[in-house]
Length: 505
Image 1 (cartoon, rainbow, N blue to C red):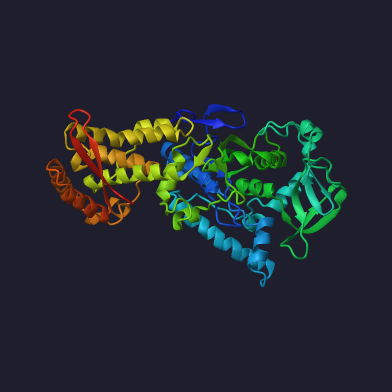
Image 2: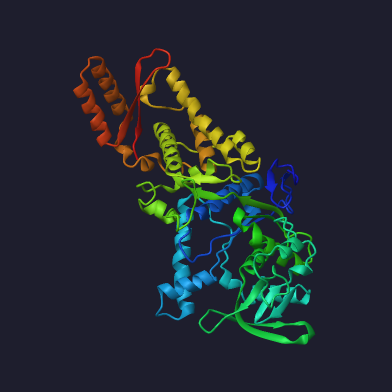
């Protein structure tokens, strides 16, 4: 297909509108997403952009081909919070060594966490520390990018810092819609004496003897050289790493809503001014905020929770939560909407996954075919995962309804043909769900014989009709001890008692 004919629409934060996606080069779709600052284990808020843009990565690969999409997600491993954590955790080590110890541990944990959430590995995951100084391979680095800004009149030196001059950019503030004059007039933070403007931000800051630093020399106006042992500002890191792999202008830049200002705004300023381009990125995408149990997540609120804690401990809801549960719970809300992350939401997601796995187990083994076209259509409408999940839900519930109509609800659910099971599984896996063998998900339910369960349910129903409550309860308790929970209800037509079952995780 020609460019712009894939049917993909994305909401562009820059224009505040949903737009047709027209790639710069359909042979190489390029996307950059801000990754974690690895000073601590990633919290559940960090999981949302990882999952959201993983779905977009999957969709782009489907539309344009796996070999025609480049996805970069960076690792920020130089940051003042990292310095503080390193000094706290490894006081007896030299600071640079301590920093490496901190970031190695936390980065490794992050990779394990997002893998557990079902996220594909990005094409590249550059570390900020590897792009500070000029590189042997010639890829863009931070010091060279800063020098370019100085030469173009967009940066200046003051008190051991190199600062970006926001007044040098006529349309600074387009992404966040913040007018520079208004910012200056209403600035709540006092102008630091060495800054020309209150919104000027650091590109390079001097390091003390106790802080990590790199030796860098900058040629200033008039030919003067400033040699500053220092470290980069936060924003210049992403400008350098995105250009290194994606070029001066690329297709999509993603991240959380909280990054619009100042981080993404300042990325745009640096990159555009360094290259003299009208744009840095054609489509800016931002996921909405996350709160926990109706409150903003914070350590002071006592509701701060990491991905690892959800996966490995019983801190949240007294339960360990599989990564697929966390993923499904996230995808149940449109990515631009705020999400209330709660135990109830996780429980709902877990019940749904268990039901789907049980249905698949009755048709297993199943080879996935192709995802439902309606799912691709939903995702192509600004990544509408809510509608995409509705398609997936229907692909399972339609078969459940067919079994109920046949009067066989006590026998569990089944697919009416192998093709429907294959399409349902393909659709689920497209969303990063139902990736396990059903027996593994059902935690030992491979020993559970569905026919035996159905036979016991039939016997129990007969006992209930005979009012032999004790023996009926014995069967119920026996199955519960095996992890199988019975649910009694009434047939909506006949009014007779019917019993369904599920594996209790």
